[in-house]
Length: 357
Ligand SMILES: Cc1ncc(COP(=O)(O)O)c(C=O)c1O
Image (cartoon, rainbow, N blue to C red; front, side, top):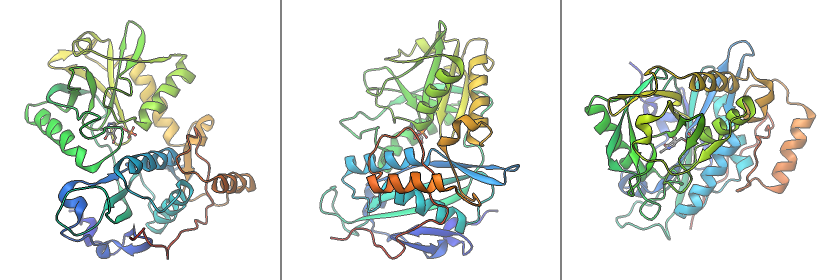
């Protein structure tokens, strides 16, 4: 039986500017985010490569750029730049000496212990924890059901921000799917167009064209989604079309797959009890799944820019120069396509405190 993180003395958590033992990382019972879901977070994966004896964090910079964007939407002031967050994360993973596939969860939230719902004039707090993690959902072929729960609209809870409270919407859909005997839910927008899974973006192959719902379909702009679009273009010369998708297009698609940091690349073999294509994993899905598997584990040198090695014995001078240049120009909401390596000896603001007012 695994011990809950909150009881572990052998794991470290980064919380409000300090590295503390996991069993000492407390959140007050009246915390605003606990009552009202007023926080935003990231889900980041790191993959262990046995041969290289290295742990690679996948697209760390892009995750922290998205966290900065989420925080802007939710009125949370993050006290760290993207570069600082990268350095803190490397330091934390090293302290926990993780040498297996794992998950990194940064969480920025409204911390006041008060009754009263709002976003302004509150204190923000920030933490990061890490846990070992295998597959989140089966990657062998999912049976999905279109949910009776609609995806939250941009004017309700904006899906482009990864807001903790919005996951109640995902939880309703996922549980309904599971209780109805499906593996995963596909949610529609309030207008009835395909949006996304409970924690995954969706792609379909139809008439030889790869299609995914566009940004305005109340989706989280997934980092895996963008990765797959790049892999499809670079590896298969296949351009992804972003457009509105009708529910019944799913019934006649040749292939469907879901993408997400947790879920990775999941083939969908059935939607609403109708087989997708042949009812087996499609060729394009299989190729992309295999390529992704290799890319995230550092087996494809041409995509190494997406990986942050945690234990790299010595980063080269060039790496230091890249990091220094990025830090100088400040990585705050930049839209870089590449993940600059950080100094292995992570600088942290261990004495620093989250903003107080
Ligand atoms: C609602 C939702 N959509 C899509 C995704 C996929 O995003 P990413 O690929 O950045 O993990 C997630 C991931 O957690 C999610 O929660």
